[in-house]
Length: 262
Ligand code: IPD
Ligand code: CA
Ligand code: CA
Image (cartoon, rainbow, N blue to C red):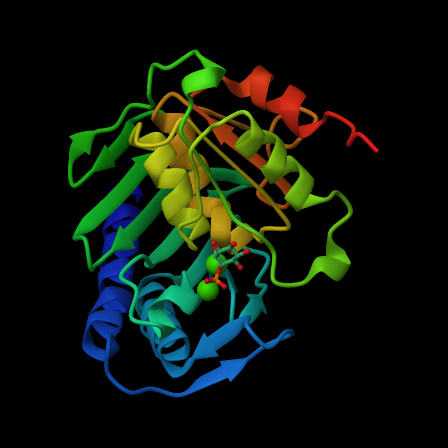
């Protein structure tokens, strides 16, 4: 069963990737969702359909939660959590930092995760208890335990209305420490790049389960730590995400939770 699940996951990410490659820098329809710049393209929908077709062909009874198609609840113990394009704004602008992200939960526990950026030919994969890999090479988080020399990445929500903390003040605090803070535009890739040791830490408010499902397991299996902003064990349904190499986690929590000075 596990081999079939894994094989289906990999075929599904590749099916989505074929569509991303086909349309990249070409013409396709683009629409706004809940805010002007939160985009969905016809490629998101086509890739999602191709991914779901692969999964359904093997496991018609499994639960699917996918960003554009929504929730297809079946009562199954297995739940596929799909983001057909993470980094849609990048994709729509011809920026090759975007990916397909798919996580598989079994009885509420993330078992498998894959994040594929076809434009960099980077396939991140993890299986619970068996490690994380980039194109079959084992992945490990960075070793840096010095907050002062950390390299960080973050993202910002499209709609400020839903944000209860002020993401700009947290961002400002890290910037005022003189730290390099990047913003790639794909939370799934941000998480994988922490897993790969390229970044030491990532935080963001208001992500959705499909942004994080696969990256969450990839981080953990690469030896990193992921939590909400209280430092509690993580759930992909949390609205606060802090993922680090583990060594700077407490220091980042402290900075994130520092009350703003008036
Ligand atoms: C977005 C990306 C981005 C993050 C946004 C997400 P989408 O996902 O992950 O990095 O900052 O909050 O919505 O819309 O490209 O799938
Ligand atoms: Ca996303
Ligand atoms: Ca998406």
